[in-house]
Image 1 (cartoon, rainbow, N blue to C red):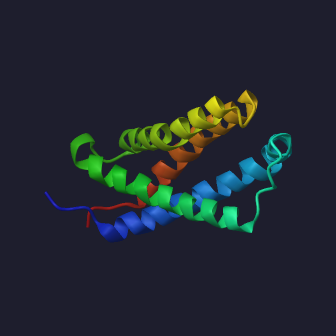
Image 2 (image 1 turned 180 degrees about the vertical axis):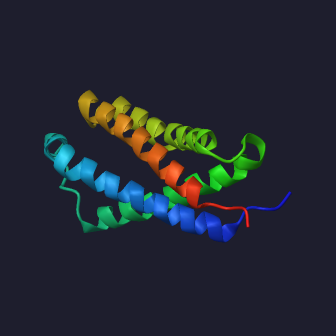
Length: 140
């Protein structure tokens, strides 16, 4: 059994990260931008600035890399393809998006609508990113 193809993880992961970042921009600007601004204002928090955006973009690429690495790691047991990519996406969604949303919800930082839309959007975003990243990953 061969090891994980690091180059494949990097290529697939960066493309997956790009998908995540573009999707997050669409979600957080045109779709939920006004709701996000209102929620931040309600808590006397500043608007999201350049430093935070840089962190979010970096995290988007890191999540893409982890997503494709996880796909590569479970692929020998579950087989290559969309089912394995979907499993990797659901695991990353649960550990990253869902658990973070529970924290934000428990603290009452954002309204339920904002959290629910973000969770559903994030699941779809990760499924697409995993499918594309998984298609780009090869063992050789």
